[in-house]
Length: 41
Image 1 (spheres, one colour):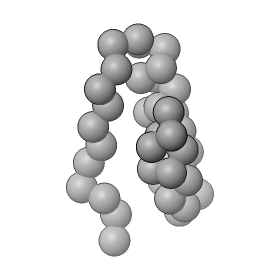
Image 2 (cartoon, helix red, strand yellow):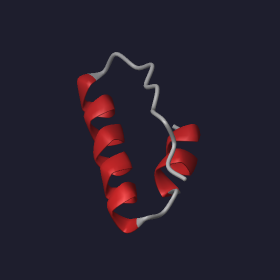
Image 3 (cartoon, one colour):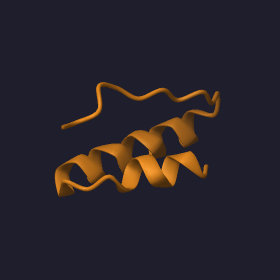
Image 4 (cartoon, helix red, strand yellow):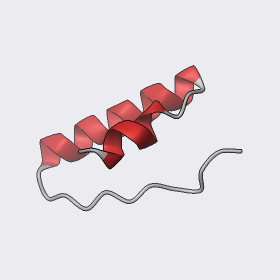
């Protein structure tokens, strides 16, 4: 099952862009690495 969404609470555009890139990369690979990496950011 895929998650229903993602919440990013950051105002730095570069950080948000990189978080979205990581999430898309993770979805393409079929892993959950984005959620675990973003949780520590």
